Length: 139
Image 1: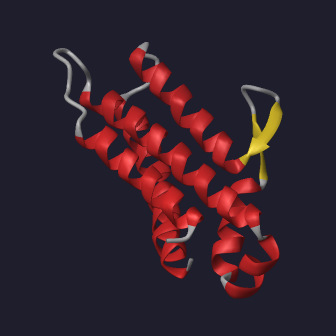
Image 2: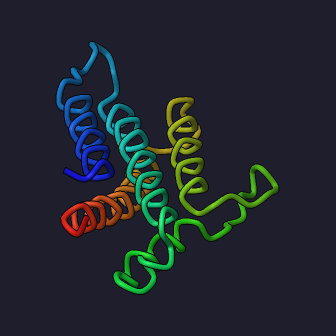
Image 3: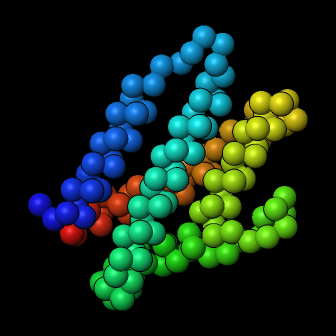
């Protein structure tokens, strides 16, 4: 098996085990727990997709242009008003969701705001995971 494919399979199995074995602590807010799980999986998925694309950009640009464009979209700079700077879109999404989660914990925002941000984030995370499934089958 290709070393890159072994690495990807190992990361995927670790994510499944870590999330599958999580138990809800008494008094823990399920929405916060789900958000933290999504932040962890999302960061791993975004990082892995960008790393794979970066390993041979020319090949991905030519052979799987939609995957390459998605990775370029994740890398695109996005303004983060709280930080008064730009971050890659993937990092900005992680920062934004984490900030909304903290505001929710401190009762500065509603559960609807957190849930809406979580659904948007998970949509992108699921797209990254779908691409990783496709790409690992091409390796």
